[in-house]
Image (tube, rainbow, N blue to C red; front, top):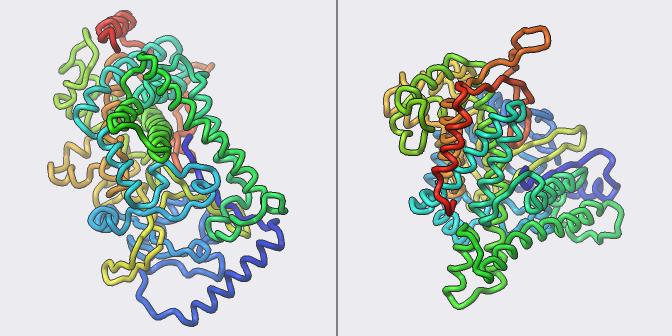
Length: 546
């Protein structure tokens, strides 16, 4: 789970909030009389105070945004309360604005609850665009984009993949738990040099507690402060200030998450026992400059702390979606298996060097990304949840923020507009993907190389511009290695019920910021009696230092 923002405004809020909203309405009405005419992008008609919040459903908001696109075009203007929002429903619009004009569109809205009250202010995903953001971005690039860094992580990726394979062999019904263990184990070691043995690891618990409590503390009324900043100044003893008391409680958990593994690495370095990792590399860089300031130390804690949140939930979702797709589409699974048998054989496991020789497997992975976008409205970081006054309506999005007035296609987009990319709609684009709801790896073989590159879902699912996921190459390589090894060693098929009948799972996914497949069962069986030996040999072949 990742840090999440909740905005909830139920009917039962105090008279104080009612008066505040009346005040906001009077300001809106006064401003509307004076506002100069401007040609804004088309969109649904807002109402006073609420804007368009009341028009959004509880679940699957990306589909509502897609319906708006059919009515108004791929660039849709709306309002959340009185905050202007532009929803981008096409890849072209997202690239035109978020990439080609990234200097204007790389900011974040002010996140009062999450950053200023809860203490998530030192993570890159919530920072405004500026010098501090650029410093963190450079660190992330050096740690996850450079060729040397990616090669240095391969021994961890291999070992954690082989551990996952062993888990599937021993308890295949727990495949989702094994995937979670794989994701967390990889990230913890690469970030902090810390190897976990189970999900009960103390540092894993710290991360889980901080992120889960962040979500829970965003319960009714909490995020209204982001739309009405004056609420930040309410004394904690005042009725209606529960959001602030909860935020301060969560702040202690966030601080523990940042401090504990960081101090573990510092102590290991002092004793000469630290393993190379992202945190040690940053500490060594600072020490080489004759020490560091408290601000730099806080930056390192935040840069490391956000990697756990960014690197686990979505990779788990992608791999779980892979298993579901293979159960439902055995023909695709068998074709990939035949390709692996031909190219790699059955006597060893696939490795990174085999990737370029497995074109159908590459198509299959692309289709997993496209068939179900893991994060429908943006990459997995700061999420904005809004609930209307009238009913429990939640908007799930990761907004960019426009820093200055802009013009696009003859429309004016004013400064301080939130920009929401609808990634789900981009991966369902009929003009690029005929029959988009079908899982068809072959579609990529039928495209010209130019079209396939233009439509590559990796250009969508990892985000855009200067907010693109810095760990995208690491994540993609890790997922590929697992998929290749699982297909090589195991058969995946439908489960059998107590009456001997096959059980066909429904291709259903939870609504949410990260859209997980709904629970399903499947059969995972080793292809050979020698599977255990092949996995054991792969483990033994790993370098001793790994």
